Length: 527
Image (cartoon, rainbow, N blue to C red; front, side):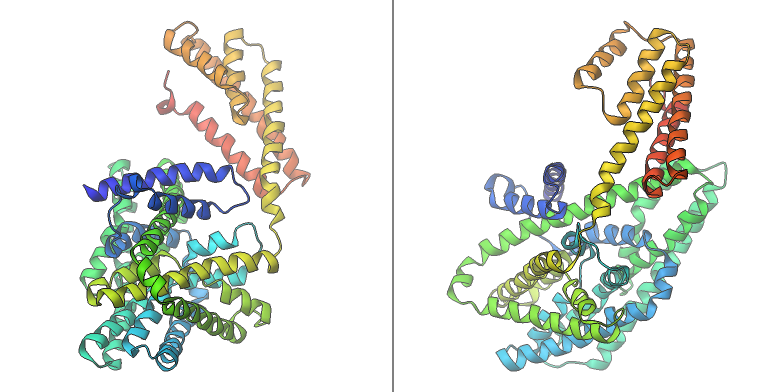
């Protein structure tokens, strides 16, 4: 019950903060989610409704589906082409960074080597969601963005394996390198195999029923939504990497959507909408949780924070060493290997909730004092990894003016197409009631109808004062189709004359097609 109440409360905060973010366009929506989470954690009335953070539950319920859906948005061919880069960043860079960081923490600050390795392993995973938040509104070269995105998909496994090695080292007093390497390859290769095999089996089942007369869309959708959880649990049960398994499974599903979208368009369209919806909600969910956890960490460790600032010094040192290692790697292997490219790559290694989840996963293996110290160190590194690039990117990177004017272009196109649609309706011989209803629907495309207009129409439908007859309903549908034809002709003319970007035209064009489906599909006829 606590989990259900906590999830409900966090989802409410997500919904409210996402709405508030629309009123603060200059601030990244993820930062608004983070601030909302902080406020939720500060207020006792809301904080007490949310259960203590559990790293394992978070990994299963939030990160597994999020990584699955993010993997599905990435073409598998792109991963194949960048396999060398992925292995370099997710394995080579991560491992070398952890070795250097462990050695420096042990030598310079006298931190026990196993504990130093644990700190280094926990901070290794980067967060694609957090990176999107610090880069919002800025242009960055595609090669850097793609490298950072693919790195964040696969370096979790490296961090998890080396964290396990650190805990075994701490418990047994010795580091068994051969066994750790074997475990690493087992988790990585096993995760790839489990994710591939289970994804192909599930894909085959779905495709078989999609191409038969026994297809049940509700069951298909349910199986699809449960897939990341089943794959994650199955891989972890076999001792493989559940993270890698769900990512690989998502990558395989990307090709499935591209080659089966017309076999059952309604089901595929609904599935794509689910992916978009889930990505947005889960991304926001992650930042709200991060805000709540940060508040609790600061509250629980206040006395330790004020007695000694060793945690702050170690946290800053950890982040600086990470930056230096990433910068050196960027100069050697990333893009054109120039200074700015390397600096952007170094700063783009943003850390977030995966790091916190890994931190809390070892809470029972350390003494309370040691665990609190690790938590504070990782918290400092997380905050620095988000704040520093947010500031520096605003200096180094140009603004994304195309994205800024996109909304203006969309508004311009909608205004023009609606005028074309209304002009067409006025030229058709229609009964007044039919014309009035069709005009209302067309004006709704640009939210031109007021709340008063809506309630007027709502009362008419519910009181049966002006409900259209069957013949009038048919006439309205035909009138709307004529209006949609006029709107499409308007957009086609703009695209042909290259007045606006084609992508913007396609976005509006797809909205018209969706509106047409609502008019034509018998299942959508509510009255």
